[in-house]
Length: 127
Image 1 (cartoon, rainbow, N blue to C red):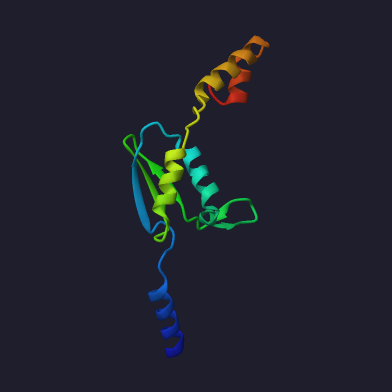
Image 2 (cartoon, rainbow, N blue to C red):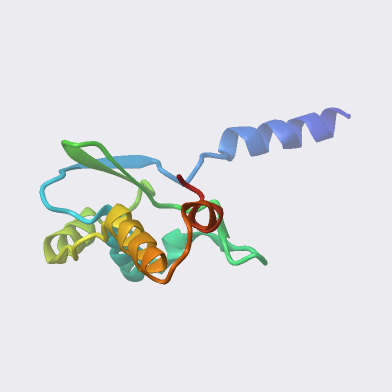
C-alpha cells in the first residue's frame, strides 16, 4: 500500500498540465478568431490533441479565446512565441458569414415557394 501511495504521489507531483500553460494576449483588431485557430493548428498540428473515434480531439494544447478588446492564446509552456507571432502577422481574416442574413434569405425563398408560416416554423424552428 505504501509503494502504491509513493507512486501515486510521484505521478501527481511530476504531472503538470501541458495544455494552456502559457497565455499570450493579442489586440483583437480585425481578426477572424476561428480562422486564426485553424491557422495556428496548421502550423502546430501537435497542439490538436489526441484524436478520438468520433472525429473530435481530447486534451488539445491550444485554446483561443476572445473579448471585444483582445485575443488570448493558451499554448504549451515551451511554445515558440516567434513562430506564433509569424502566424498572427500572416493572418488575413476572411469575412465571417452573417448567419442571420442567410436564414432570412432561406426563409424568404421558402415562402416564395409557397410554404406557410407554420411550415416554415416547423422547418426553421422559429416563428
